[in-house]
Amino acid sequence: MKVKKMVLLMALTITTLVACNATSSENKAETATAASATGNNLPLDLTFLKNMGVDAEKIHDINDKNENFDFADLTEEQVLKLLPMVARKDVDEINREHYIKGAKALAGGYTMLLYGVETGDDSSTELLAIYDKDGKLTDYMQLGDYDAFIIGEADDEFTKGTAETVETKITFTSPSEFTIDRTDNEGSWVRDKEGQIGNITDLKWLVQTIKRYTVDNKGHLTLVEQKEVKREGNIPPDYDPTFDDLCMLPMSDGKRIDRLNKAINEKVKKQGREAYLEDMPYNVSMVVAEYYAGDPEGLLMWIYKNRETPNMIVEHLKQNFTSGWLEKSVLNQVIEEMEDTPAQDYIYDLTREWKPSDE
Image (cartoon, rainbow, N blue to C red; front, side, top):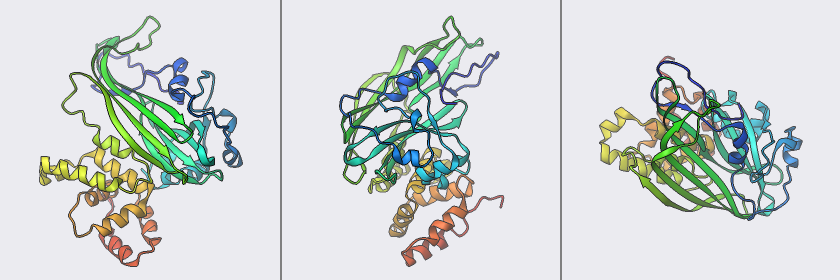
């Protein structure tokens, strides 16, 4: 499904927190394209995509507000060429539907592509990737589900209730700079006369954050500023975007593993090591998996260089393999390709027994 929409659950009862999306086909195009193009009007050259056999005619400018567009579906071969990290992700990732939702010409001949990846239950996640003129990937980052509608409560007839939403807007201020404006909120919803879920009303809480990024002459993304610009209502005590933000750092960010390690240590200190180990937060393991997929040797070298310092990153990476979320055979291949022999030997011994318990 290219258009995320509400799955109508016409049942007498529903389970709490049914994840689905209420954006209709009429307004989806405007949401996907996001923002004004006044800061970047460079001509868009998608020759490298055409050479791969991608239907580039379906790819619109990220800021194009034409509502009558389709997305460019990708074959498995095209996905692996454009997004090689997919082969190192979740074992089911390669089977998910990938498509290009938009593109943008950047300074220095680079091109930004906005992807959608189907994740099931009529939902998807988005990511940004940067390519040089030859189609070589220079950087990428996750955006999460940036257009979400998550039902929290509903009446028996499923005509009204509460929901949490995510709204995201991308705005270019120049050919080498853009902002990502994200708003998380919760409020009430009511089904309209046509049976569609309406907009959020009676707002309970809202948090709006703006991140500013630059793209350098190597095609690398840098998060230069992040600020919370609005906070309203009674924010839930468990609302904490820390690890979501860390998951969305660019692949080229050389300090992101240290930042993740610091955040984990703070959580362990607050919770206690034994309690943390027992809990092993899923969202933290997913950040570690994302870092591994984007730059596996970088993460493995970080582990080797920090081998004398206790850290939970090793435990989280191990969980990804022992739970079967990541393929051990792919890890072994990465280890074989490591050029630092002492590090290679250390990582091989460390991960020797990392395999699902049912094997």
